[in-house]
Length: 240
Length: 308
Image (cartoon, rainbow over all chains, first blue to last red):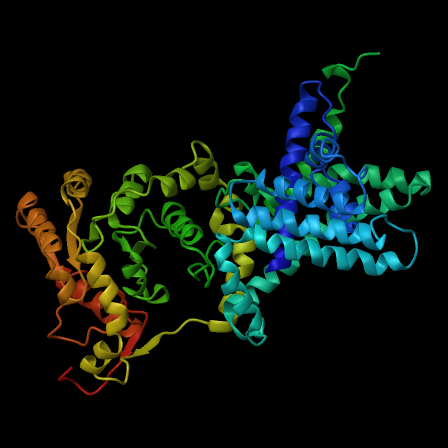
């Protein structure tokens, strides 16, 4: 369920941003990208260079640098990170849950800086760092998702309960199957793009075939979306 | 060189639209119009209500008998026991008023409409109606089944998996506890309902809404039957009693059926919602009282007769 929320908030906000970018482009404006595969980040520092890039740039330029950035020693740098991220959390709403979410990220950024783990690497360690970062980000989303910060106790109690077999109930089976199918669909459409992105020197022939198949894939996706219409839920980020 | 609309690659758009249309047509051909799990519940009141209303709009407006109410109606009777000539709009946390509006918008002309009085204090669910009756699009959905929420492939998949695990039941037995014991055991669930119903509600606005819609329906030749299936303690609450009386006054001679506690064990989870056996029994009772012929799909396994 928690991982599901990580997926939901990314799809929600990144999709929302892409719609804005696309509409602006129709009118001749080129807006900067707001996301760059954030769940492939190798550290929280790396994550904030990939997630909500417009906000993180604003926080860096107008808050972090104004507070002195890293120019007044290590302790002050860590404090600045906490303040900036705490305020960044409050940007989402005047609620303690957002402040705690921001402080969680601020603390992680400070720890990374202390341990010198902020910069992404190109070695085997990245294979471990990506899932670890994802888990840390996902734990942060817990605070974000809560209705009230006081609900955290209920959540911790739930974690303490023994593992239930989701397949033991009809709704569990149905939920899990639906999620797997959705994940498979998302993967089907994203893997070719990720593949081309990861291997830019791919042969021209393969690129041409991928390009030619794209309209058919988009047509299929359009039909899938049309045939999955239902409740109209507002974007999560619409409220911020 | 400036690009213009004339240099736009329309063939790519044609490929996208063509593939989308072909996929929808394929789904239309492959998915049967009626599936055994079409009424399998889905999580969440809002999506479930959309499915219930859509099922009526697209698949049942021709049915001569329509039952309108709230979640109380869910078990009157269990969905797979509903006879072929009966449709039901059982809205979770809703009321019959929304169902009446659905009938009006669709332009259906049923012969008999059962209207639940117990929850008539709740007004029309404008959000639900807005979601289902999207201007123009709901008519496109009427023509193209794969675009319906009821044929949403995720909903189908979810329902199929749930149905495979549960399957339908066609035979129901009363709970083994006596009714007095049952009510004692459920007291903690009945108390909050009595508390909510105990507030002093202004029944005039919903009454006006209800009477206007019922009058319109009766004017079109539909026989309207009111019913109240709640626990006698709930039914005795003054505003609900007043509501029934005012409805009788507004429509002289109208049929008003109440659950006959003396005839069969009325097992309710919380004073409102029936267990399956009682729901099935009460449905059969309504049909009998109204003199509506129907072919039963489910049976009640008898238990030793009262005292309940």
